[in-house]
Image (cartoon, rainbow, N blue to C red; front, side, top):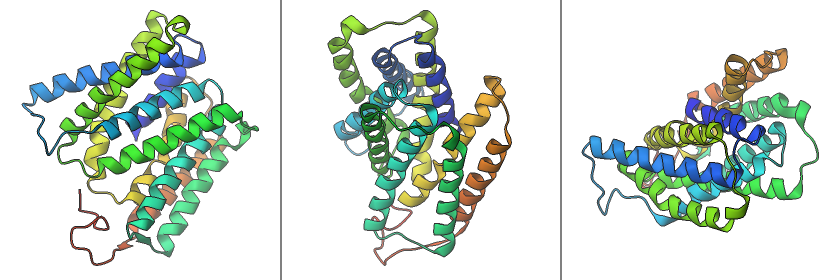
Length: 282
């Protein structure tokens, strides 16, 4: 989650002052992630096989998330964008979890509601009537990320799968860059921020996320991501000299407490052996 929050901060730094355009940021981000992960996989002696490779579906979901998020970021304020993004992520993953047979108990639901309430409280001062295009783009980003995360639960080798997914996402990003060629712009600072976002916060961060997903149910994976806006806000205080407000402290307590309660409670699964309802099924 720290990697995801770092990604949000890097994106904010790059796009807020137009150091780079959204399409250029996405293209550099995905390309940098692919190059970094290819080097990591090679150094680790990991090989792509028919059983551990990624997929074009995951690559497309990754591209749609990264592109839609960047394009929406310049159209929505941070609070509204966070609610739409994580609302769609939650809905996508929770619906899939319920359909797979996951059955949260009362404490689980209480934790989820508390954490979601903490997120609403955190971003509520900045909420405005969202622009339709920006809302649609951020909703697309949330659904795409939910799909990408759900597909990651089946990854046998997170390093190889994530590497392959990034490599497959690059052609989509390059196609978008070609279409937007006349509107591309960027400074050295913007490019470097995009490289850092792709190589560190995205590439290596998503490998860790795929590792984590192997031990999480869909609903737990959705719930823990509610901590990202809080961590990002804390990072803004530490790195961007933003104000540490009472609202942030209270919201952090609600979100972290809710997530902790949700993770501490147990799930009831149908008797499916190693099927989708089993948290140990990859």
